[in-house]
Length: 534
Image 1 (cartoon, one colour):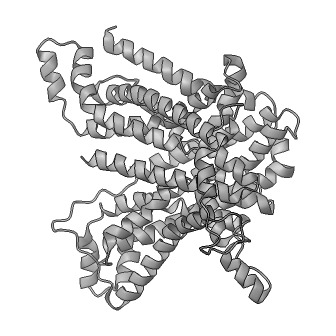
Image 2 (image 1 turned 60 degrees about the vertical axis):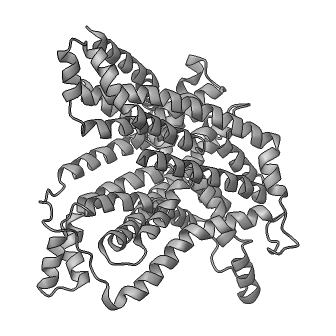
Image 3 (image 1 turned 120 degrees about the vertical axis):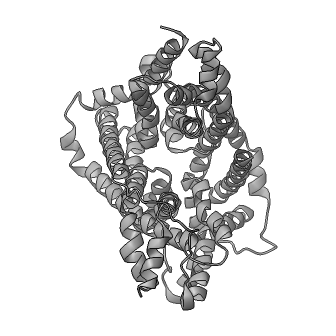
């Protein structure tokens, strides 16, 4: 055993402790007793049905919306495609629970539109609270994922095929229906499974939008069981629910792998990609696309600003009513400061740990040869496919046995498990496209395998690892599901602070703090993207 083998053993010990141990504890507790009868009756069955319906319907709508946007922005001559692409991706950068708070200011019971509509017609135009609002917001925050996946697959489809169909007399719609869309079926399936599993255990949107109308999902039910203990042996029930969600995630991963293997391999186009002309529909399509994307991205931000500047819900937005008290409270209150301090501490520590482990794992599995490399990478990437609820419950089970129960370090461990895949992916992608000639030259000059790996591969991958670690920090600082389920005295994070304000009825204060988090998050992600391009 040389230095590289020792590093591999150390990494296996690390991922076993951070990933395999909590998941194993979850499965062991879930199958220690038969709780299927409880899961098929009462509140759990209804919550499971609501979760399946909202996740599958929102995933279907997200794939449809993402595909339409991909076709318009990457395959047509629509004006302003570059700017529209930024607007289309912006919901991906806003935490879902913040988006839910913003949309309450647009379509909530006390929103200006619903207030006026009620005065005129006796009932609101549309109350976003309830199952339809949950599906809508899950779709809004999921379609950018579908767009990214479908657009990547669309760029691999030669435009020559569509042009040949157009020359043969086919209309634009027929060419897209019979040529382009059939080639994108694997991408559709991959996007649908990824989004459905992610939405299945989302907590922020169902808790803020669904609970006021008693629309309960598995994530909100698990939160209620953990907080109130309304069932016998709640941890056993929660573990069983988590095991079922984990099984769904594994099935989704298998489906995604099979879909990737069935992807069409087409020869590259001999000519530059030709955009499809929209013809007489160009003006109407342009107005509709711009209006829809601006409504989905700019309106929520304006709603957050208006709610943050008003003293209470339902008060009209006038110069006399504008106040900065909510913004002042959001930046100076003890709870907000404590939540920000905890979030920054936990997210930075998670970013550093994930950067070190992700750099080592990503470099080892891409620049060395070993039978265990594929398994090591699969284990490190597994949490990326798991809902945050599963990760939180798995750590909640083992916390008393390892002395981390009711501590901030429990949240840190869950963050590391949830986000290490971001760094592994960031490191592996550029190293795969880099030849091994530098390492071979170092080995020929007498360097050991470990010395060549450290001096050549690790140094090349450090910028990618830092970018991945920065993404971990920016993601963890806005996280809610894991933080709220593992909440301990003195460990309240920013996401939990906003959620607590919303649940306590301090809607305008929650909007002000959400606005601050959103602006800082968008600025941080923008700087990260700019640094990555450099």
